[in-house]
Image (cartoon, rainbow, N blue to C red; front, side, top):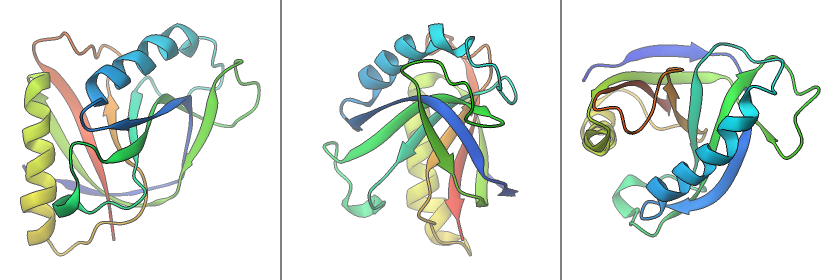
Length: 159
């Protein structure tokens, strides 16, 4: 996997969040998505059709993370501003900065292997360091975890 290095402007997100662990990620993300998806069409100021799956870590230390490591998980969409939000949704601003963007195409259950490769192999052997900003995946409009093959972008904050 070879990334594309992208300088991103700030991204405004409207969605839902919860505290999860790596052990509860699949079920927790599914619950968030089921709560969010019916509300997404009420968001009038969307930018693009992609959905975002976002992880906000207190401190990302790949070598010391365990299945019980807690982080903030978001499911949402990008918006042009935070005006006229549907009731019950929250906002997150992803600060501008550089990202290593990896294209993942494969079975949903194979995602974790790619994620591990990025953090255990690619990043330590690259010229970059991890930056303290949210990590996220951009998912196409047609994305569904039951699809046999997924196509998504993995965005890793770098400096």
